[in-house]
Structures are given as C-alpha cells and as structure tokens.
Length: 180
Image 1 (cartoon, one colour):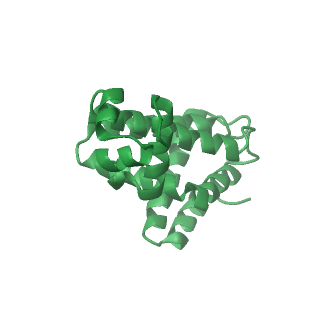
Image 2 (cartoon, rainbow, N blue to C red; image 1 turned 30 degrees about the horizontal axis):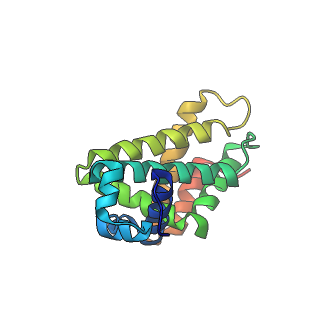
Image 3 (cartoon, rainbow, N blue to C red; image 1 turned 135 degrees about the vertical axis):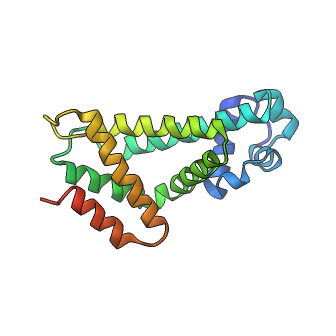
C-alpha cells in the first residue's frame, strides 16, 4: 500500500479497515497503518482528525448506499411488504454485517454528542428514505412519508436483530406490512 498519495485512495484503504474492525479502530495510528502511511500524512491530507473522520464517514455512507443500489433493483416493488422484506433480507446478509456495525457505531457516537456523526447519520437516513421512496409500488400515496414509516420499522427490526430478537423483528414487520 505504500505510495497512496491521494485522498480517494487513502479513504478507500481506511474504509476497508473500518468495515473490518468498526469505528473503534478509527483512531489516527490504526487508520494510518491501514492506509500505508503515517498519522502526520493523514493530517497533511485532511487538515485535522475531525475532517478525516468526516470524510471517512461520508465515504462509508456512500459505500453503503451504493451497495444497496447495486444489490436491489431500482424498479418499483410489487408491494410494500415485498419491498420491506427485500430490504430486511439485504441488511441481514453477511455483505451488510460491517455496515450494520458501523451504523450502530455512528448512532452510539451521536449519543456521545459528536456532531459529525449525527450529520452523517442524518445523511444516511435521508438517503435511505429517498432510496426506499424510489422503489415503492407505483401509485403509493405520499411516497416520502411512506418511506419514512418503512424506515422506522426497518430500524426497529435492526435493533431487535442486534439483541437476538429476530422473531420479534419479523413479527413487527409482518404486523406493519402484512405479507400478501
């Protein structure tokens, strides 16, 4: 990895590191090691640690939304129940395991009054609302409001999954969006 001299390459290497170890590994020295550079060079490229973390979180948010776009079609779903089922199934895949961990790390940091993390969490959620709204069945009334409601159910299911309450998560989804 020696010779990574641009921000995009540095961010790609650091994002891969964080996907593997979570945000707990997002301190300067481990990030620099992962990028094959020094902590001083990271500061040179990003100005300070806050800017580096902001750029890294933005990169991870873009990756997550990009992966969602790549995996699920952008065509309207047959029903809301089908769409939420596809989304939950996607989040439960091993591919999305690192993003789920990072998501909860971001939320935890937001609770610790870290404004950059809160801004990135907001960006991710706004992106997910738009992503869901674009895939709702044709004719859905007020797709943005419906996408927000679906996102609330999805986020609740993810929290329940996190603590091993998969059956409760599935029950909540089925009650909110009964299968056809």
